[in-house]
Structures are given as structure tokens and as C-alpha cells.
Amino acid sequence: MCLHKRLSLVILVICLLLYPAIGAAQLAGSPGATFRWPEWAHTARIAGAFFVLEDSDEDIDARLDALAAQNVSVVLADSPWGWSYSGWVDDAEFYAVRDLVAAMVQKAHARGLKVVIYQTGLELTSYPERNPGPEHPDWPQISLDGEPILFNDISSDQEHWLDEGEWDLWVSPCSSYLPFSLNRVRDVAATGVDGLWVDTAYLQHGIGNHEDLWASTDPCSVTAFQAATGLSLPSEEDWDNPTWQRWVIWRYSQVIDYLVAFKDAARAVNPSLVFFEENWNVDSSGATQYANDPASYLPYADISTGHEVSTIADRVDEGRTGMNEATLDQWLAFRTMIAFARAADRGKPSWILTYGYQPRDSAQLAGLVLAEGANFYETQGPGMAETVGEAFRTQLFGWIAAHEADLYQSQSAAQVGLVFSPRNRDLLDSGSGNLYEVEDATHFAAYRTVANLLYRAHVPFDVVIDTDTAAFGRYAVLILPEVQAMSEATAEALQTFSGQLLVVGDTGWYDEWLNDRSENALADVPQQHFDQVDASLVAAANTALLTTTAPPTMQLSLRRTAGGYALVIVNIAAVPASAFGLDLRVADDVTVTRAHLSAPDGIESDVAFSISQGGRMIHLEVPDGVDTLALLTLTGSS
Image (cartoon, rainbow, N blue to C red; front, top):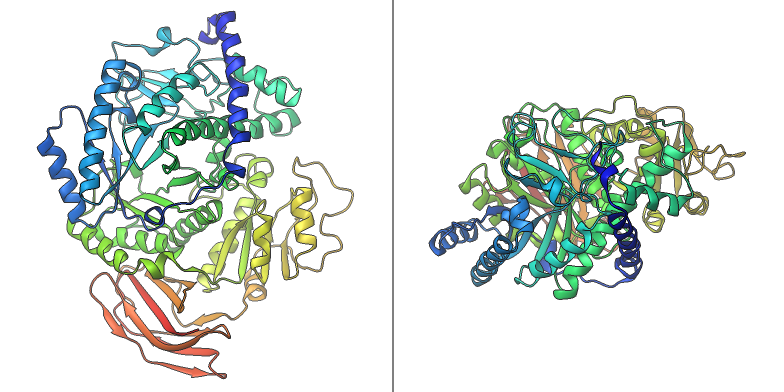
């Protein structure tokens, strides 16, 4: 008999009493709350470290001394709380870890380091002799076929953090685990940590040999879905079934509500604590499958995302090759994911965890992260506490610290917005579209193709989430690539948009639930229509803000600073770049008097430039030698 069928009536009643409390926490929480992210979170230079009960004071001191010497500003600190069932559940071990963390935090603060604690979300692992199932029969998530998501047959060849025989438990957010975990996180917050990074807040979809799980069919979740929608749980995966569509979208609320409640419990103890949910999905179909989309937190002023963005390595967690063998298309897909991250976190810091293999590809990864105004978390797989090289980290982070004003107090100068729609990815694409493959997706494929062509043509643009209608007015051009499903709110914002709309394919023919519209949502709106994504779309989008002779392997990001402009230059080729020309149309309120080129490897030189068109057009030649990453600043008076 399936585990969930043995739940007692008492446990079920407890679940039903608990779940509405999470929703109440969401309503009382962040969307209307004011939270000011501290400056250190916006400028964070992040590295990981692992701390265990066996560590001596000397061990901890040495680890923290090394990180401080490497110009790290934020330590992502892991401990048994980050994975261990016994470390989280058993009082004696939990409080021993609490004392360890509290002592470590004091030591870190004495060195000027901030500490953000890595915390398990909905996954706990236990040694073979101890099966968590009988101890907490209502805790496991339940798959669509009625089986508890509690496995002990997953090998380290399949998932690097597990060994065959260990128990891997995925917990339902709609269970008695909720009040238990909220009590625990209050004690975590009381240690003095500066923030929380909560991983594995997913409804597990595929792990080891277990695929297509479609979790969240435990009795409490079934009843909550019925209460929210008036519908019964769908019995099978069917993307043409409106009930299936409603269930797929509803599942997001379970993870959101859990994280909001977790955050609120910690923030009640430490109001200044920063809160990141780790998410490996970025813009891909993983969000649909695992019920956690970074864009879901856009309305929450005090929740941001630690984005784990995979490289192309055959198994990113082993860091075997990183991006060393990446094609141009794969590099541009990576950059698009970072641009999406910044759209999902608009106004908040984006911390990017990715896995370099060697200093070269790690510097290139860092460059694309910095190009979008995000923060680089340096490591090498399989662990989150490794490095591709201490000397490399010291040099890179020292250079970032020296230029943090240009990198983090600047804003994108792009005049073009590329609209991405999570709802179209979820329902129109039916869960298609992976990190580096568009598969048989429609919206996702068109969006990724537009991004690729714009990057190749050096047309500055930002990704814009379709629900973030307040951001539309920032742009002179909006591109809508197969945004076929569209809410009334989005349609109304586009109907009043004063710029140029470039529309691809069947945009606007459905509402947000894929119901047919009798008339296209943008029927009376001036627009330029394209049947497909091609060079003519790019030409129409190009506002001639920036033109260059640089090849596509030289990626540029144009940012507006208080005194002028900053261009992040990233060479994703395998060899140092040749010189290239660059023309920039500057704003009327900027007068450029100096151009300076800087790179982590020691380049520091002024660059000659010429001015035309009454001071509005700047021309310069970027010299030979940019190996991986550089910053070109144009400064003067404004």
C-alpha cells in the first residue's frame, strides 16, 4: 500500500490546518513589505565553505583567513543543516551545529566577511540504517502515480551528492514539516548569520532513475488544490486538459508559500537578514516541472534568487570541462540565462552560481555575469566550496572590488526589451525547452533565437518578464516572440506602449489559459509583424545606439554610470582578441572626456577616442589583447 494511503485522519486534518497558514504568510509578507537590500548584497563576491562538527577553532580560522585573503566578501557557508536528516531533525545534533555556526559567524565578522548559510529546503538525506518514512509518514511528497518520493537506490554516478543505500527524502510543503522547519529556522537566524540561501525548494520531478514524478498528490495538497480551484486532481499528464494546466500552474504557489513562510519566520528574528532561494531552472522548462520559477519572486521585494546556471559540461557537478568546449550558440544561451535572471530579480541582487573548469572559462563566465550586473559565485564542481584556483580568485575578486561602482551602481543602457513569458513556456510549450536546447518549444525557441541574433549583432537589449508591465516603458522597442498566451493586464500595457512593437508569429491569440480570443489582443495596436525570427527582425530592433566591428565572440554590455558609460567586454574565443572599432551614441546630458580600459590580468590604459555629431557620437578603437574580460569606462561630466 502506498505510504500516503496510510495517513491517519488526524495527520490529514493537521495538514489541512497548516496549509492555509502558509497562504496567510504570503498575503502578509513581501509583496507589500518594504525591505532595503544592503549594499554588501549588491556587491557580493561569493565563495563557498563547508563547516562540520569535527572542525577545530584552528580549522575554522584557517578557512576564513584564506577566504578573506582571496578578496571574498560573502561566504556561502554549508553545514550538516544543508543536507542531513539527523542534523536537522535530531535536537542534540541540530543544537551542536547551531553552536558551531554561531562561533563561525563571529569569526567571519571579525574578518569583515558576511555569512549566508546554505539551508536545505524540501530535501533531506539520511544514512542507510535510518529510514525517515516511518518517523514522519506525512512528510514525503507523493508522485502522480501515488508513490512517496523517498528513495534509497540513487548512486553517486547518477547524483553526485547521494550514495546508493542512503535515503533521499523530498518533503511536502503541505505537511507537518512546515511548523517544524519554521521553528528550526528561527534558531538558524538567531546565530547571527547575515542571510539564508535555501536550496532544493522543489516538487521533485526527476532524480536518479526516477523520472516524470509530477509531485504534489499527497492528501493535503489534493485538498488544497480542490479548495483553490474547485477542481479534482488530474489523473495523468495531459497538456490539452485544462485541469492539468491549472494544476501545473497551481503547484507554483505551494513552493512560493513555503518559502515566504520560511523567510518570514527567519526575518522575525533578524529583520536585516537577506534571503535567497537557490534555483537551477532559470528560464527553462525545469521551472514547469519542478514548480519553482525565479520569475515568481519578482513581486517579492525581499526575496531574490541564487541562480545555479549550469555549464555545458557532461555533468556540471563534476566540473569536467566547464565551458571549454562550448560553441558560440551555447555561450550566448548562457548569457541569455543571466539576462533572464536579472529580469526575474529586477531591483534586487542576482547571485550566480556556476561551475568553471579552469581560470580561462571561469573568467569568461564571470564576464557574462558581470555584463548583466549580477554577482559571481566562484567555484569548480562538484562542490560549492571549491575553486578553479586561489590565485585566480584573488585576482578576479580584487579587480571586481576595485570596479564595483561601475559594475553595480550602473544600469543597463539598452533601448530594446525582449519579452519572455513564463506562462507560454509552461502551457504553450508544454514543458519543452532545456538550458541549452530549445527542443520542440514554440515561445521558448523564438525567444532564445531572438536573443542569439541580437547578441551576434551587438544590439544591446534586456530580457523583460511579460508580467512586469511597469518595466515596458523603459524601452523604445519591445520584441514579443510567439507570446501567444497573454493576460488582459499584459495586453492592456502593450496597448498603451508608446514605443515600437515587434511581434513574431501568433502573438496575442490566446488568453493566459490558452483559451481562444475572438480578436487578437493587439489587433488595433501599431506594430511590425514577423512570421519568423530572422535578420530582418534584428534590423528593425536596432536603434543604432552602439555599432562595432567586433566579432560575435566579443560580447559587449553597455551600462549607464553616474559619470558616463561602462562597457563590459567579454572575449569568449579561445585566444586573445584583436583590436576592434566601436561607435556609441551618448545621451544629451553626457560629455565624455576620458576612456579607460582595465582588465583583471593587469591591463590599465587610456584609449584614444574621437567625437562627432556635436559631441553625441563617440568613436574609439579597443586595442589588441583583451584575453577574457575587460571594462571600458567612458567618463566626463554630466
